[in-house]
Length: 442
Image (cartoon, rainbow, N blue to C red; front, side, top):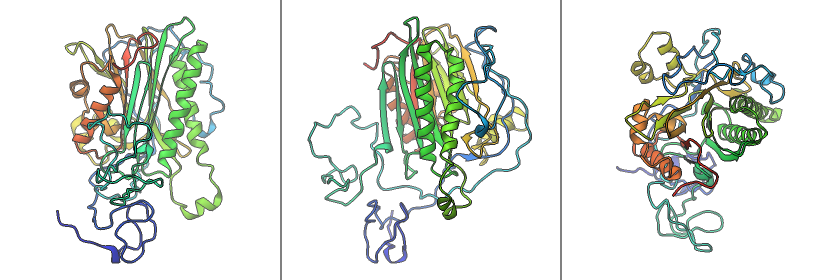
C-alpha cells in the first residue's frame, strides 16, 4: 500500500493530538509514524442508549436453582441514588430476577470520536511467543522493528516508536481462573479491564471469581471507568464470599458497588467540564461470574457476556446472559430475528450501563447448577463479535481450557485478532466445578 507523507499538513498528531513541528517524521509524545495516513474505521464501538432492557427468556440449560435457596435483589435504582453496598436486604429467591418493563428508548448517541482504521504499533500478540519470559535485566527489544533496544523513556533507539503501554496487553492467573485483555488492532488504547481471584468459602470449599468490564467509547475516560468497576467488584466478591454471603447476593452487591465507583468518576472539577461540556460521564458495562464446587452465579449490566461450555462438547452449551442492547430489544419484541438485529448498525447501542448518566441501575443475576464439568467464558463483545452464538463459542474454546485457562484465554484473544481485532478484547475462563486450591494452568 502506498504511503503519502503528510507532515506539513498535520497540525497535531492523529494518535495523541499533540502539536507537531514542520518536518516531523514521528510524534515526539507517542512515537506515531506520521508518514502513515490511516483510513476511516470500520468498527462500531459500544455506544449508550437511554431506556431499559426488555424481558429476556432464561437459558434452557443449565437449570436455575430451586426457589428458596437465597435472596432476590431489590428493584432497579438510579446508580447515583444507591446508598452503601448492600442489595436492599430483600431475600434472594436463587433464580434469575425478572426485568421490569420501563419507558421506551428516547434515542441513541453516536457521538463517539473518529478513530484511524489501523495503528502501526500494535500490542504484543498473544499468539506469538506468549510463554517466553524475558530474563531479568535483559534489554527490551522494540515490538515494532524487532531490532532496536528500548530506552528508559519507553522509545525504540532504532526506529523511534513508543512502546506499548502496560494496559495494551494484560494477562493474569489466580488459582484456577485466568484472564487476558488486549487492545486489538484498531483502537488506540485498551478500554477494557478485568479482575480475577479465588477464595475459600466458610466451609473450606473453593470459589473462583472473574469480572470483565468494557468501557463505553462514546463516554469520557472509559478506560478509567472499566478499571474502577472491575477492581471494585472483584474486591467486594473476594471479601464477601469467605464471610458466607450467598454468591448471588454478593454478585448483586458487587455490581452496585461498581456502579458507585464509576459514578464517583463523574465528580470532576468544573474547569475540566468547561473544556468538554458535551462529553458523557464515564461509563462501562460489567459481567461477572462466581464458580464454587456446585454453584455457578453470573451477574451483568450491558452487553458483555458469559457462556457455559461443557467439557463434553456433545452436551448442550448455553449463553448465560442477555444483552442490555438495542438488538436484544428488537429480538425480544419480535421485530427482527437475531441475525437481522445484530447485523444492524445500531446493534451495539446499549440500554444498560454503569455510569452517572445511566437511565437506571438494574443489576441482573442468575444462578445455575450444572450437572457436569465444563468452563465458563466471561468476555466483552470484542470476542463474541467473532463467536456470537453459544455453539460458535464452544467451537473455539480449547478442549483443555478447564485445566489450562490462561492458555485457553490466549487462544480466544488470538481468535478475535485473527478475525480483525476491531475492538478491545477481554476474556476470562473459570473451570466448573471450582478445583481445589492450588490448581491452575498446566
